Every structure is written in C-alpha cells, then in structure tokens.
Amino acid sequence: MLGLIPSYTYDFEQLWSLLINRNKWLIKLRYLVSITLALFTILSAYFFKLEFSREQFNTLLFLSGIILLYNVLFGYLINTSLVKNDVEHFNPMHISLLQILTDQISLAIVVYYTGGIESPFYIFFIFQMIIGSLILSGFVIYTIAGITVICFFLASLLEYFAVVPHYKFGVLLKLPIYNELDYVLLFSTSFGITMVLTVFLANSIARSQYRRGQELNAAFEKLKQAEAVKQKYSMGIVHEIKSPLSSVQSYHDIILEGYTGPINPQAKEKLIRARARTEEAIHIINDVLSISRLKLQTEIKKEEVDLSELLRKVISKKKVQADYLRIGMNFYNMSTNNGIVKGDPVLLELAFSNLLGNSIKYTNPGGVVEIIIEDGKKENEIEVEVCDNGIGIPEKDKEKIFKEFFRASNVKHKSYEGTGLGLSVVKQIIEQHAGQISFQSPSRMANEEGLGTCFRVSLVKAYLLKE
Image 1 (cartoon, rainbow, N blue to C red):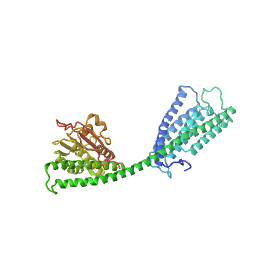
Image 2 (cartoon, helix red, strand yellow):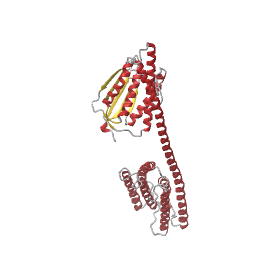
Image 3 (cartoon, rainbow, N blue to C red):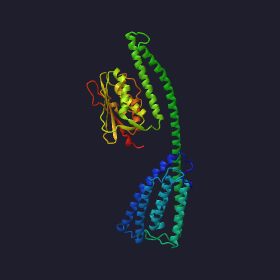
C-alpha cells in the first residue's frame, strides 16, 4: 500500500479507531479554516484596506468555498460503506492522505496569492506537517514535505524570474523582497530545514507514542488471557468445593425427613441451622461461579424472552424459601404492551432470581415481596419492579451497593450470610442487555416493621432492540 500503514502495526483495530477519530477532528477544524479564510478575505478588502487585487479577492473567497465543499464531501465519505477498515480496500488511512494532500494544495494557493515568499501564511505549512506526522507513516509524510519544499522553492524562483506573476500582500510590505535572489535562496533553505526537522521530531514522537499504545494493547490482551485462565481455574476449584457441600445438604435432608429414624427436637434444631448454613454456602459458591462466568463471557445469546413467563418461573423456584420464612409474594403484570425482550434467558433469570432472593432474605418473617411488570416511562421500554418491606439500605451505603463484595452495614451486623456479589452480577447482566437498574430505599411498601427496598429494572422491548 505504498507504505501508508506503519510496518510495526499489528493491532489494526486500534489503528482504524485512531485514524477515524483524527479524520473527524480534521474535518471539524477545516470548517473553522474555511470560515476564517472567507472572513479574512472580506475584512482585508473592506475593513483593513489591504488593497488586494480583484483577482486575489475572488480567488481567496472562491477557495474558501472550495475548502468547505470538499470538507463536506470528506464528512460524507467517512460515514459511507466505501471506507472499510481493511488494508486491502479503501480505508481511513486513504482518507487521511487525501485530506492532507488537498489541504497542502489549498494552502499553497493561499500562500501564492498572498505574496508567495512574502506571505505570512507559509508558517501554516509547518502546522500541516505536524498534523500529517501524527497521522501518516514516515515515508509518506517525508515525501509530502520534500515535494512541498521543492515546489515552494521553484515557485519562488519562477516569481523571481518573472515567469509567473507575483501577488504582493496588499500595502503592508513597502519594499518587495521576492526579487532578491540571495533572500530567496536563504529563505528556501531555512524553510526546507525547518520542514524536515519538524517532520522528524513530530513523526518520531507520534511513532513512539503509537508503538507504546500497540505494546500496551498487546500487554492488555495478555492480561485478559491470563485473567480468563485464572477465572477458569477458580471456577474449577469452586465447583469442586460445591460438590461435597451438596452431598452434606442431601444428608441433612435425609436425616431431617426421618429416613434414619427419629431425632430429638434439640438435635433437629441444630440440623436445621446446619442445613441453612450449608445452603448459604452453596448460594455463595453459585454467586462466585456466576461472576466468573460473566467475566469470561464476551457476548450474550439473543433470543426472545417473555418476561412474564420468566418471572413466574423465578417466583416458583423461590416459593419454598419464601414459605419457609413466612414471606408473602405477589406478582402483577400491569403491562399493556408486549413484554418480550431480547437476550439470554439464563442470565436474565439469574438477575431476577438474585433480586427476588435478596428481597426474601432481607425481609422479616410476615413481610411481603411484590414483583410488578409495567410499561416504562419511554414507549420502547418495559420495566420490572421487585419491591419489599424488609430492612432497607442505609443512606451511607447507597452509592456502593452495586460494587463487588460490598455488603451493607445493616446486613453484616445482623449476621446475614453472603458475598456481596449478587447485586454486582445483576447490574452487569442488565447492562449487557442494554438496560438500566435503579433502586429506592425506603420503599413505597415501608411500614413500622421495616424500611424496604424497591429495585426497578428497565429493558428495551425486543422489536426495538438493535442487533
């Protein structure tokens, strides 16, 4: 590709992202340049009285319009399918090159019609080289800089020998200097050296920063791979721990059901407590496994999920726990529209199971939990509210409630078991489904027995969710 792509590039996604952002920045800057040039031309003629010739005035004003026109074209082009993030096709690097070349030509015309070697605008060639050095490869920008210096020198000589007409910079310069050969040679030499040094310094810095970015990306990818290996290893160990605990729980059930013979009330009470502790341990393990799976999962399945059906399934699974703790559960489907969302049913079930499980766990015996499906505030949203009149969330803990391993102060003091991962898992799942989660505590169900908490989940309806 004629050296357009730096030879040390191996992370092309990073390169395309960088080029797209810088191309857009150039387009925004060029709008300002076009307006500034038009204003300068008009003010020079009617306010500053620089006495530009009619040809100069018309050319500069026309050029400002041309700059605006091709800038609009570039803005349209970068958003079309013609530009592909692929080295084998027309890509953002080609757009960058075209922008630099058209700007160089436009600037050369401005410099020529404002005095050539006497023009104060030649300094913008240096600015152009800095921009080009940040975007283009060394070979390309050095080539452009070399051609610019040669053309500038030849144009100065042609003006000196009167081969082409000289346009003075209005009446500001009393004595012409374009016809002093020694000055032309000295100025062209210093201009050439300055251009080369500018490209060298700017391109060296840009190349160094770009390489560092590539190295950091590579290091980050290695860290991600190492994290994935660690998560899989941890999941394997945690899963092995879960197996004997499940067996212990089964033995508790066998004894409590009386299959091994009668047991006295005191022993039964101890066994019930031991089984509850075992169940809490299994819940903790499940939380750890869930967060590990989420971290390993880069994409989620997308299929249509009926929220009403999913929530009824979750409620059915939690009914035994709620009945044991004497917690009432009420479910209301108040949605007037289709409550179908698109996502991973397993993950969504896990999220709502955690929310409902928390409400049951942190509600005192005799309390109530309500699950409501209703239309969202926006037409394209469906909302689920899980509300209780339990212990609530202290004001000082509200900002941290979704952080991993964080547990509210009133939970720890009352000996509730848990890891502090449940709400973190819920938040990650909801955000993966382009949704939002919020909460209110005290809840609308608050009474003298407790403050309560209401969690509200907003999800996008299936037919409006972009693939």
